[in-house]
Length: 366
Image (cartoon, rainbow, N blue to C red):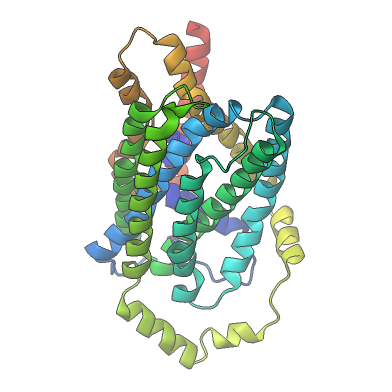
């Protein structure tokens, strides 16, 4: 994850993506609630960060090593087939899961079930991805189907968990102070989860076709188990009894019941609303560039490090890789005061300009 993405990950979701939500959803813009009283406890904040711990622990290993692992198992044809199917599914599941999540009534029935059940399933898919399913020779159909199936399942469950986790913040609070607290908890959880990348490189072996990948498989299983514990703790503790009581009271008084009487917007209507939004084109372009840069960097970082630093010890290379995941989240915490003072949008624009400037300098230096 890069600086632009990680400055305020959840705030980015709630500020930008909320501007593209259907018009029937209530606004959670903190500027509309200037006197919101902080109400998030330390336990809730820790629970909110626990989802990010599990997400970072799993995803940092995945984006770093899945290209290396499967490139030794599938030929070029199957690799491109898998990637094309994955891209089509990835472009479709984001609005689909967002529409399904927003259509569900109530906080505890809208967001937390996705973390409670989707998180462990995501961890299982992650752990199983590195296993041999039997009879998978290089370039075989079974290996290609394994690659394609794992890509789609992994991305679908990742979207389900992280989308609902990001959208959970405006459901929990409208207080700027509380949102900063939750963002810091997410960053702390991500820092702890990112340590998996350090130990992962210690267990990783280039002999992914042979028995050398065994230690990495066992380590990935342990990571999946720890992530599952984090997801379960998050889903259980992020909503208090007071939240559940308030939700039940609202439903009883017809607060959300009246909204449910309205005909739900169809998926096609939601997509049309988003495409007509004045910021949709620019938002999509920036997101596409960001995803491309991030994906390219993380997928090939370990390969470049191993090739260009062969004379450097494996511990040092592991430290370099893990630092690339940890450092942006440390910056997230350090920039929290600036976010509170200047707003998320201003900090994102400043960081984006800095990123472009540093890229130009790096290109000039060569």
